[in-house]
Amino acid sequence: MRKILVLGAGYVMTAVRLGRRVRGQAEVVLVSASDRFVERIRLHQVAAEQRMPVREIAPLLARAGVRFVRGTIGAIDPARRQVEVDGVPLAYDRLVLALGSHVDTTRVPVAANVFTLDQASSEALGRALPDVAARAGRLVVVGGGLTGIEAASELAERYPSLKVTLVTARALGEELSNKGRAYLARALARLGVVAIEHTQMRAVGPGHLITDAVGLPFDVCVWAGGFAASPLSARAGLSVNERGQALVDPLLRSVSHPEVYVVGDAACPVEDAGAPIAMSCKTAMPMGAHAADNLTAWVHGWNERSFRFGDTGMCISLGRRDGIVQLRRKDGSNRETIYTGRLGAWIKEQICRYTWLSLRLEARGWLHYRWVHRQLPPALGSSGQKRLAA
Image 1 (cartoon, rainbow, N blue to C red):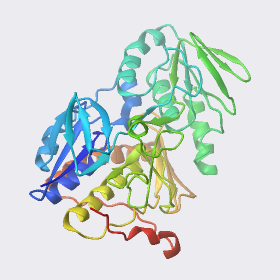
Image 2 (image 1 turned 45 degrees about the vertical axis):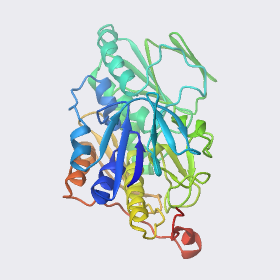
Image 3 (image 1 turned 120 degrees about the horizontal axis):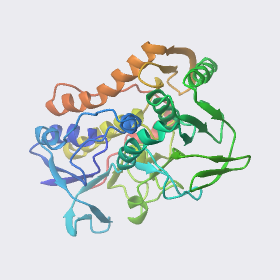
Image 4 (image 1 turned 120 degrees about the vertical axis):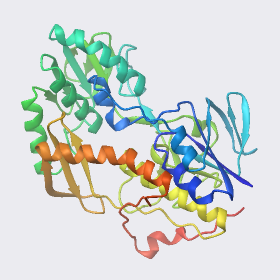
């Protein structure tokens, strides 16, 4: 029986969708160091000490017919088609890397006492902030992307006594339309968040941020300066970009190792997929589902298809009672239509809830997860109808 190994349990869509479809015809094994599904899109809420439900993945995988191996992933050996897990080699016929990403703290010198919004650091930040807020301390959030905006908003709302500053090297909310940027500025001002734009970070020392314009003292610093992929892809010899993301073809296979599929934050498509592919939940789940569909085709001897993605919009929480939903065209360009306030917050919450719900329904066979596709002209999408060699 053919064996398909899935590494990483971020968004487990690949494993649950594939396991259910090839049950009895191929063995699907998921390997992860954690037995829980981490809702990364809620880690700013964890930092604000909000209670999050525990999402155990073992029952979900068992329901879909997937074998779960809990362990630490070591070396990947594509030549031998095996992966070392806690010192034990696991063989595979096809491999899926769903290793996700981590907050990148390597671009500038960063002190050890800086917090990030990875799981363990978010929990530690939640424990540290009450004392800082009690003395009306200074919180600096570095990074003007969605992670930084949501963290600054959530923590300013949760602890009104904090003096919150958001520092970004670019324009704040540049991913948004004109209406969206204007609303974001007003919302942050209402929360008392001071935004400093177009400021390059040079280093983060103990208790102070060094920029190209001014030194900023702080009691707590949250670093949200972008993401980097797991180093395992590069160590395995896969072709990667400067962020460590594996370069993948339209079928989501590594361009250097076609028996390895890569999805989510760990992957960077080398061809146009229809809309920009960012490190985010909204692209990770479609990529995971599509890899499952292509591996199902491989098991059955069918043609695999090119990955296509059409954007619909983006949503930003601004605390628990405010948010922005920015509508987009399929090609990723912004519309001027936005939904804000409590309606925006409600829509964002429903989207967050749907992430876990869709996995549960897919595992039970009650849902066929779908996403918006943007078809490309034949000249741009001709490489997708290829049969993968054995």
